[in-house]
Length: 197
Image (cartoon, rainbow, N blue to C red; front, top):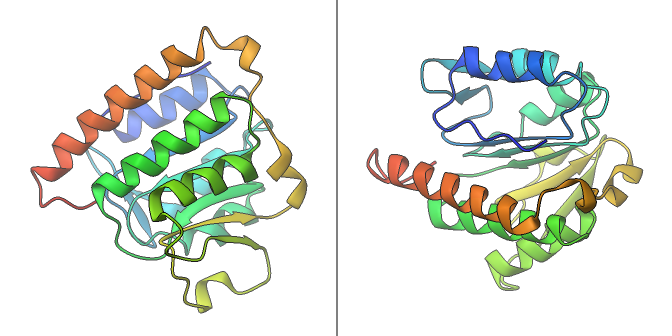
């Protein structure tokens, strides 16, 4: 099941998790954020509340927080059982954020695992200029400077081998079309508000 919710509200997020309980494999957020909250259309979603919500999903493999400087939320997500998180340690540029998402989901939809998809997307976005980080719980990721804005943080390394069952998708082109359309809509919205996630 693939479900996009542009300009999501708090009710939208809770409704989706209630409707698709234990069917959610990836939760992706794209928008304004910081180390404590994600900015929804109607309110700020606190990281601890998101962690409690997504931590109840038995099939969840990854939370992708594609907004500014939200890496401190990783520990909250780990505490609730989320196995892998992509998060940021700095302000991020809209175009880079969109390109990272696009390349990550393209690679995932073509059968690559989480580790491969992140590496491919990161290399595309940074074109080899910055060090890419795959970090593990307990290594103090939020205490050390990393050069690349995004990090892939895992609680258990085995989750890095997870792949999408592409036979269950209508077509990967449909998935990519929906991602591109939603990314473009979000890009237009945020560039009108100052041009940064």
